[in-house]
Amino acid sequence: MRERRLEGLMLVTDRALCQPRSLEDVVMQAVRGGAAWVQLREKHLSTHAFIEQALRLRERLALAGVPLLINDRVDVALAVGADGVHLGQDDMPIPLARRLLGQEAIIGLSVERWEDVEKAQHLEVDYLGASPVFATPTKVDTKGAWGLQGLARIKAYSRHSLVAIGGLNATNIADAVRAGADGIAVVSAICSVPEPQQAALDLSQRMRAARSRPSAGPSSSA
Image (cartoon, rainbow, N blue to C red; front, side, top):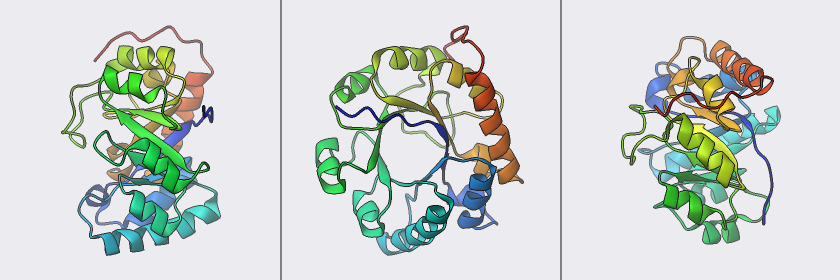
């Protein structure tokens, strides 16, 4: 069984929210501010364009020592030599993805229901992405929000690292960390703000401060 622990601030990209700036510019600003890993999510690009974008990002992120994960597409991850993938419940099965990508690859898995968490307990994944924690316009095809109590329940049960995503920003990131999140994934909190580097720095600092304080337990489930 894998026991690799992953934590930190994850940037999940959204090309539309980055405009008029380039996606690469926003990503690298976030990395300078403290983003520990980057998940490239491209729902509408052709495979050719997706691979070209991933190759450009991989080169720059490798120089910064920051892992690049590819959302959904194991084929793209293989093509560009990415550090791993983030998969949903309807994507390639985890055992097959692990066999194709190898033992060193980082594989994350979205969990939207408690049944997903239970099934993941025996899978070779490196983290679970609790999705969404709070309702958010960037994740509309979900089965309800976990809330802080849901995060705490997953943390108490699962052997995997836990990454929280969905509706997270400077106002609630500390609550999510104290509820049990090892990592925090954000989209609009970095992609849509005027100063991505400062936003990433602020979020990273709030995460570190939350970890340094004893948890009083989640105060709400919404």
